[in-house]
Image (cartoon, rainbow, N blue to C red; front, side, top):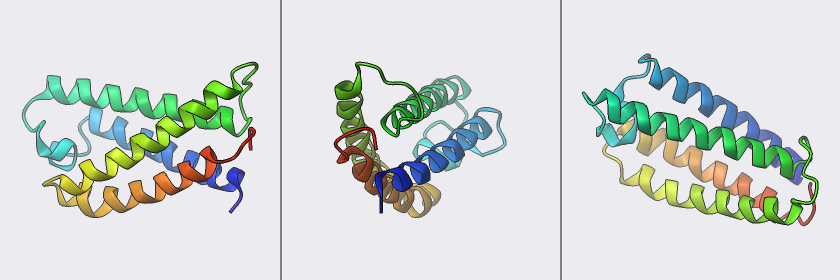
Length: 131
C-alpha cells in the first residue's frame, strides 16, 4: 500500500474519531464507553480529557496532512517526519490502554481499530519524503 493511500485512510479514521470525541463531549455517547469508564459522573474530568483528545486528534491530523503534502510544510520536513514517528508510538501505547480497559467497546472496537491506525501511521512514517 502506498504511503498516500495509508495516509488517506488514516486521515479518514482521524476525522471519524474527531466526530466521536465531539459526540462524547456533548453527551450523546455515554461515559462508560470512554476512558475505561473512569469519567462516569465526573463531567469536568471527562470534558478536560475529551478536549485534550480532540485537540490531539486535530493536531495529529494536521501533521499527517503535512506529511502527505496536503498542507505546506516549508522547512519543517524533518520535524514532521519525527512527529510522525511520535504519532506511531502514541498509537502503540494507546493499543495497550485500549486492551487494558474494562470497557468492552474500548477493548473490542477501539483496540483493533488502533492496531490498524498504528500500522497505517507506520506506513506513512517510513516514507522518506512527503509521500
